[in-house]
Amino acid sequence: MTHSFAVCAYGDSPYLEACLRSLVRQSVPSERLLCTATPSVFLKDLAKKYGFRYCVREGKPGIGADWNFALSQAEGSFVTLAHQDDVYGAHYTEELLRAVKRYPNLALFTSDARILKNGAIQRRSKAECVKKLLRLPIRLPFLKNTTAGKRLSLRLGNPIVCPSCAYRRDLLGVSPFSTSLRFVLDWDLLYRFAAEPGSWFVSERPLLLYRIHGGAATAALTENHVREAEESAMFRRMWPEKIAALILRAYRSAYVDYKS
Image (cartoon, rainbow, N blue to C red; front, side, top):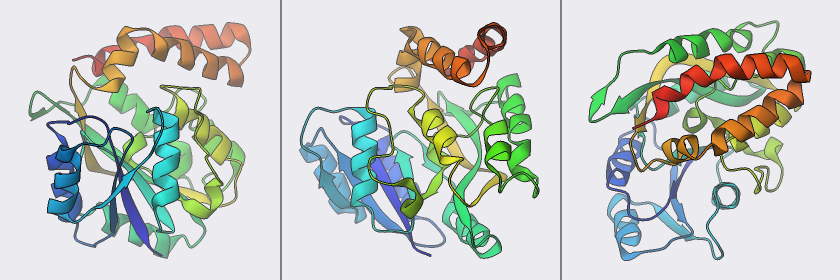
């Protein structure tokens, strides 16, 4: 099994260098790429400084297109699309390797995360506790290998932390991420990916610090209601209209965790 970290970089983030350092300091090394559709001297110099292969996508920036490009550039059998603002624990790749050894048919690896805000790790919120509960189906051996079991973990919201995911690349196909979605593209992919063979594994160790700040895409898409619209469409895809409306009403209370 080989593994790649593909960092998707946008603009000149002040948090990017901390992310790159965390990937260099992994206890087990991986292939490392820095991918962008907004090339700059800043990004090129950081890639060179930390030994990342620098990959530039031509064309208009877009999350889905950028993530698809990063996947296409990686060579590992598993790929983690690292977000430029986040910090990875030193044993992330090591935990992934253990999971692959334990489950040779592994299709998806993911982990718990802690929220990093204003330079400090935040106390666990109710939303984070709910997400841990929703991940229970993919911790149960008799469910984690089945389409129904994997989708069960996604039907009341997406409890899987996107940048913690390592995807088995040969099962994803070409350009697996939607280019029309802006917020739920990982949830949409996971719902479809659940139908592929292989088991999902979640480590409930917090192997990631998920940074929340005013410039983050999550905060912006929450404020301008793109998040609400796309999550509403996902619930209606999985549930009858009236049930979807009730679930969404309860789900909205979690939005506050992702505001700056």
